[in-house]
Amino acid sequence: MVEKIVPPFTRKTALRKVQLAEDNWNSRDPERVALAYTPDSDWRNRDQFFKGREAIKNFLKDKWERELGYRLKKELWAYTDNHISVRFEYEWHDKQGQWYRTHGNEQWEFDAEGLMQRRDASLNDYPIKKEDRRIAI
Image (cartoon, rainbow, N blue to C red; front, side):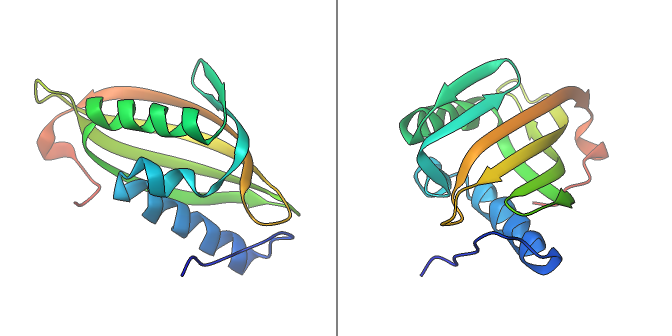
């Protein structure tokens, strides 16, 4: 059974929503992750703009084919009625074995059913040494 958390958010429900998102993304399963979004969800990820679950699934499939060993940590930054802002970082490596840490912020907007209808993400990558990783697998 999928846990349903709907707006308006309280601190407790916003924290839970963020943890569920982290767990979903760490599954690296595009089908599972896409179910948290409305069928016509609007996304901005870096300089990419797209709409809808199918586009989300395609984006995530491509992402996790490039970003190997992906592990994410999200942190609640702020919340209001139907909005949540998070800061996040994740670590991953490319096919050549170079590790990276990616930092970013996301702004989320939810519909009345608790599905994300808008995601706006700004993020930056930088190379790290494998021994400097800080997110456990």
